[in-house]
Figure (tube, rainbow, N blue to C red):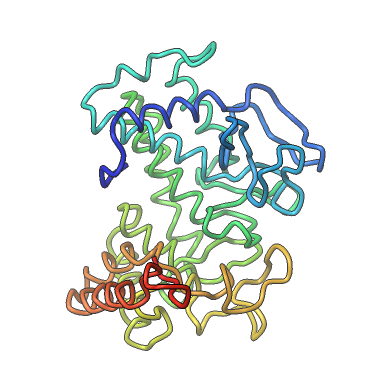
Length: 320
């Protein structure tokens, strides 16, 4: 959306399709997981069937080891979709359009309210018995307690809803999250930790994203940026411009980067220690605040690897 790769009409279609597949009533899945009213699909099949959990396209096989509750991040991405559409088209008329029996705005506000949050901190929270995925690119990692990435997405969505609605309540929620982040997620190494329960390792992606969206400021922001720059120089952060979720020095054990994962993941594979480009832009942005030449070097390494590893060269190449 932000880069303009799809047209406004395509954006509109995606937004309204997402709204139309929002869960209408509480539903207990065959696996025993729970889809609350207002939940937003994790993905939608080509026949328009909403799938609320990762790991399947089968509507009868949702949930299970992927969590008691649907993925938490999608509720806030729904708000992001609407905000981007309104920003790019310059109007907010779509917010008053009816999708079924509710306006789009009513559906956005309902979706925002679905993930549980702590009253005092407004941070997204779950436990093992009531768990939802914090962030899609760590959906196979089990995080409990207060959740960093989901809370950052809630922060951004609250800012966006405050702008769309003019309701100061959303601005207050965002301000509370911003005040709460440093104390709740502090980590001795200077980054923020991913959660306060299971898999509470320092979170490279979440820390960089917090800087990128302006959710941290002052000393905390500076500490994160410097910690990322130091790790980049030390070789514990990146491989050819791709970014590890956890610094190599912060692995939970010799067998796993994270404390707990879905299934038996091998260390340094997939979401358990492999290197991804999803966070490269956020990390470059954060490092540039304290060492712009180093950030440019990281970006150059990423582009060089993309060119060398371009999958279109043949079966022995696997980069985007």
